[in-house]
Length: 219
Image (cartoon, rainbow, N blue to C red; front, side, top):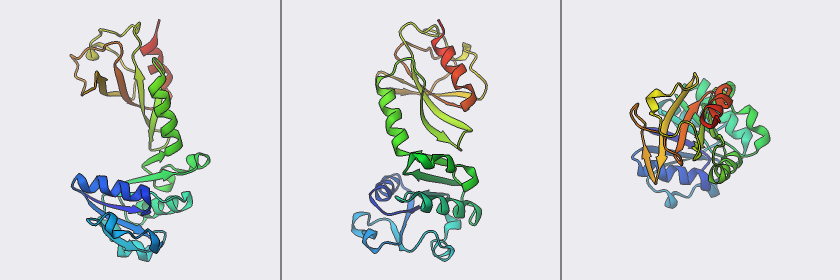
């Protein structure tokens, strides 16, 4: 997979290193000469250019990319890069970094964003996830407002404890995608049972989150 990353700061370089280790092709783009630190990610391609300019994206051959990551420290830049990647080059998947929570509402499909990652929101969600049992915690939003990755740790007295996954009638637009149990990640099958203390990971639409939380915590 070919991935272009707009923004070659610490965040962009870290993403690039992870992707390269997983066998992907990576192009890092930044207009700041001081950000071009080829020695730090030598296996990546580098381009000194303004990712908000069509000519630069032409040089980057963005149409050959399966993913574009807008990872700069400027939300305006990330929005412009996302919009150009989606509308001008038809990139299948666009991931954008949100630096300031007040701008979160802008990062949706209208601006070409498929997945928006808000560092403050993610950190607060992880704090909640670490201390909450029985509370539904939203970890990530896919296509703003359409689907969320949510987590809930099943309480000791949960009515679904011991139930088979396949016997539970989940709310519409809900999928149980993983069970975290005693340090293991389980891909749930219909015959797996739900146990108190399990961390359950769901992809669910926002409008059924309350229904899902009620089902898992019903008294």
